[in-house]
Image 1 (spheres, rainbow, N blue to C red):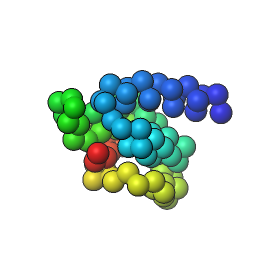
Image 2: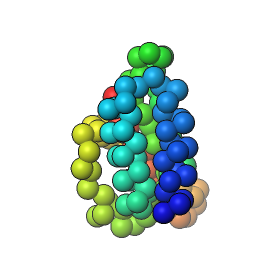
Image 3: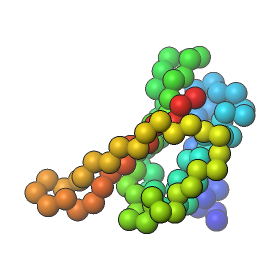
Length: 103
């Protein structure tokens, strides 16, 4: 639980620089936290756009095999897409996910 608290604090620091309103900030942070608790090992979170106009947030990570069965978005954040890329050159060892959330 303490690890989740540290993750939320670090996430809020990243997203605060985007000058979001508080309601959008809580929606997006809860969606990303829910992805993490469902089994997405989050490697990177960054936003795209020129402040004050932020278009979208990109989340990169490695999903557990059960992630897509567990993840049920219950926030108002709009997920545009989830892209999966195999990693491992000759023998793919797993998948890397890229998730885009609209603001």
